[in-house]
Length: 85
Figure 1 (cartoon, rainbow, N blue to C red):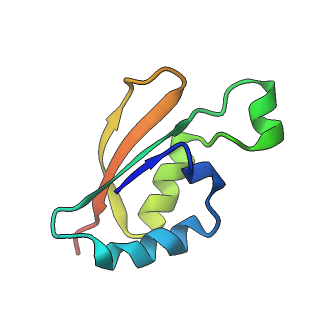
Figure 2: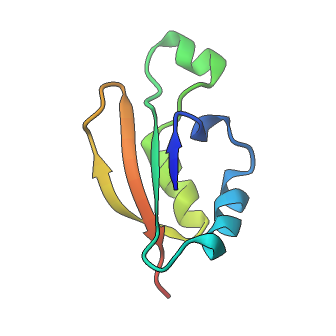
């Protein structure tokens, strides 16, 4: 699954991704690309999210961070897999 610039707009993200886990194939991954919370307006309109918050929520939903890339300017790109155990 690939989420591009919409994670910050989703409601009940932990519940959504927790329920999605049963639909992933073995070895399936979730890639999330979203904007860093930078600049004055990002806080006012909420169209940004810290990558640490994404990671906390995904871990709460039962995933673990597989990769964290810094390849897109002003955005974070993280890949998650289902947590083992």
